[in-house]
Image (cartoon, rainbow over all chains, first blue to last red; front, side, top):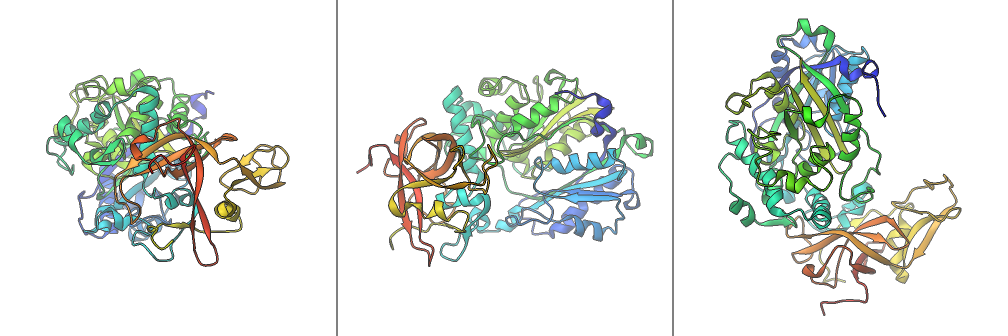
Amino acid sequence: MSFSSAEQIEKRACISGVGQSQIGRRLYRDPLELTLDACVAAIEDAGLTTRDIDGLSTYPGMAPTPAGFSGANAQQVHDALRLEVGWYGSGIETSGQLGSIVNACLAVGAGLATHVLCFRSVWEASAQGDKGRKAAMPGAGGGGTYRAAGLMEWTLPFYAPSAAIWVAMFAQKHFHEYGTTREQLAQIALNARKNAALNPAAIYREPMSMDDYLAARIISTPFCLFDCDVPADGATAVIISRRERARDLRKPTIRVEAVGTALRGRPSWDQFDDLTTMANRDAAAHLWSRTDLTPADVDVAEIYDGFSFLTLSWLEALGFCKAGEGGPFIEGGDRIARDGDLPLNTHGGQLSAGRLHGYGFLHEACVQLWGEAGERQLAATPRTAAVAAGGGNTCGAMLLARE
Amino acid sequence: MSDLPFRILPQVTETNRHFWTSGRDGRLRFLACNQCGFLIHPPAPICPRDLSKDIAPQAVSGRATVATFTVNHQAWMPGPDLPYVVAIVEIEEQPSVRLTTNIVNCAPEDVTIGMKVQVVFEHRRDGDDDVWIPEFEPAGGATDR
């Protein structure tokens, strides 16, 4: 399947500004305030004012989610900033966190809005407080009348409340089918930590060695603690603008070359047709069907690492290596290092920079493309970036290019 | 039953009652299309193959294969002794039907991908809605006693 660029309205959209709030563990700050800090920063970064913003998009919006999963919904931001929008929307049933960005691109391309404020906000660290992960688990207290329903009906009664367990089973399948090893998978975590050392906003910046990784306690085989991202408080905002309005903007815009949103397998972790891949298979194939560029054109990859294996899985899905060859591809870590063929997660990913849930990767791609990454700026400012977010049954990808 | 560890039980509805109470007679059941025989899981009111609504619970052998698994060491909630095994198994009659489940009556280190398993139910009393949680053990029975 292929489309002419004239039919692809995401190409009418561009990124004109990004912003982030304070990021940290247990900030105990008002999540709406963090959200607005990021939104205002992004609006100013684009050289716009709140009067220019006529669209609003977020993930997950008003939805029943675990504590800390959503710091603000669309209506709260709309009202706090007294926005006047031509289009707005939010939702969790979309192509991962980037689905909210894609929706904004489509709204801009369709002429419903000119400058769409997109945001993602979390306060999962403060929500856990000093009670640890248990505090964020449904029915964790024992007893009580909580009963598992919806998709959780099929996992919670089996003591499988966490995506750590669900993703671990995909990783185990990959290890079994292809001989992938923990030492190979470790490179995702080690690379993230090395890059986080150069990011003043990252949460974990002290060095981590292979020995540290292999000595860490096991969470759920084959995952150890360092394969799991770190809950954080923080918000990220991105402005999606109509490309033809670029002259109104402060900075050179970043072109949306293509998006990938497909979900062709079943929308389920355990019923998905191929347990060695995920919905990233469909989203990535969709992405490449909408561009003449190829994986060889990508200068930097900012790829979701809620769990280390998700990044490995995305590397294969996006065609940076063949299916099953993700382990050898990252082995030793040189290829994905800052000075390697495919610099990966240059801010430290969610593993070391904090779980900003998808939007952190998009933020970092933009900062690198603009050459604004400070100490961690890649030696050769990238021209093209691949951004991917999500795992399991909810995945989306974007290809961005400097104008 | 009083010595069983805490377990989050499913919300039993008219849609899923056949599944969660199936173990009453020791048999595992899925919704099946009476027209084409396709097993429909999770339960839905229509056959995805032929769109027939002529569907009803159907017993299967209870035999399955471990498609993948993980040995969980993290205390996410009150529950069984650590570590315990969470697996995805493929149902013999239609391997595209999978269950996330626990592998029991077997040491965690003995679980392998491709292992043949059989259903074993854990009965839980829950008010008026007794439920039978389908777990799986090695085919041929327990290996750890």
